[in-house]
Image (tube, rainbow, N blue to C red; front, top):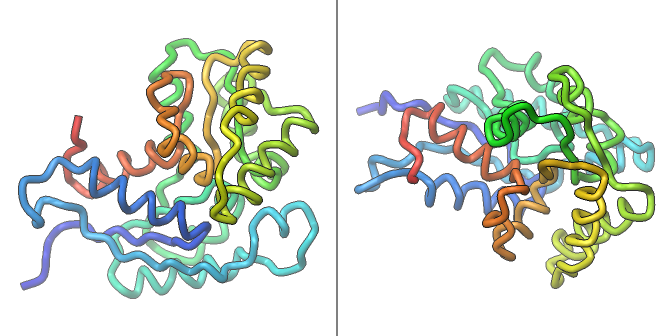
Length: 239
């Protein structure tokens, strides 16, 4: 008997650890008393997708857009009713992915900003912690500005520190220098940031492991996307 529940297609592997954390979050955050209450997922953990930031900033000619578009088509052919992409930088290629399929792609960017505005009514200034590729693409900055929110980002020196945490520590499976990251956040708060959007799913890994989400200033994109996925799939979020 075929299930009537929506099937979620996950374009994963960007990066692999963030994808694993996303799936874990969906399972743990779903209010369920039995297996059948959980969300149906098909996960394509395609770790060999070309690096998104390297392409955006011009360090690589390998375009990840067509690869992710092809992955989206494969997930649609498998029977997915909607897609999620647990990577913020990859949302630079949202239009290309969406044009490749006839099913919707839930935007981690739109969902994260909506949560920030829900959490801080009248939000005026939001900091974005993300890869240089995400910042360069402007996906968060443009979306925030369209909603009347001033985006803030680390200066060049602090952005180098953020990238070190993302690439040399989280992606490399090494210990994270948490005080370094917290120092960047403190400096953004001094500039008037009311919330800090964790616009990189590797930073979501740090947030979960270090217990940062107890601090209401942090809006974690991976956590937000997991909750949005559960609701869209017709399940209930565990409170």
